[in-house]
Image (cartoon, rainbow, N blue to C red; front, side, top):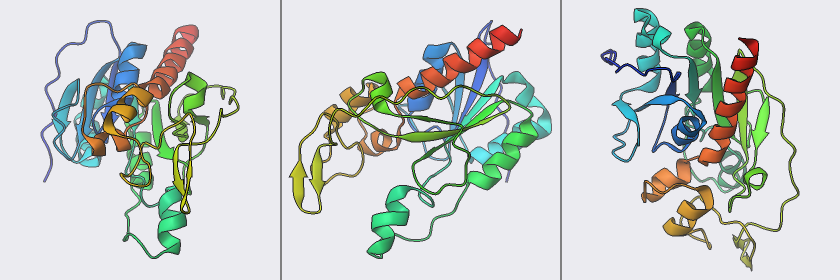
Length: 240
């Protein structure tokens, strides 16, 4: 079954960004801060999403936009396909201990549709073995955040220079193999072993509009996507 293509409001002079697999809007907020209007798509209801939201299968939604040429309303696409198939935790600790199940890798079909869209795009994934180009990777220390949250970004139809990676100021706070370590960063994932509280995650990532733990643990800090969006718009303006 296909999902109806949205009737989008007029967005004035601001470029319009499609935020696929948007969760609660960590990426969308950063792009909005960079100067985009944002439309988010997620298969789950996301009442905390702070911008125009459509509940739908993200890939079917994108396919419908392409088929109807409604994709031409957009300037740029960000995508954060589910990462469990290739993230470091799945392929490391969980696999070694026999934890977890089988995860579908949505990166390849996402890339196929993004290429078909004809638009510049981003595919975001955590560190691990996800099959994306690491055209740019970002770390919370680059933005003086309270998380490290290393993330890799494949840039389609555009490019950006890799920013310098400052030396980490210490460890991520929490238990490792039965031993507790303190440090200047919090662990914004899971719920045990000294992981961050919800208020700590909100403060560390700069996300104030949701207090749902699952949404916070899935989010990227808005500072990451603000940097990407600013870099893209600066390149576009220079090219124009």
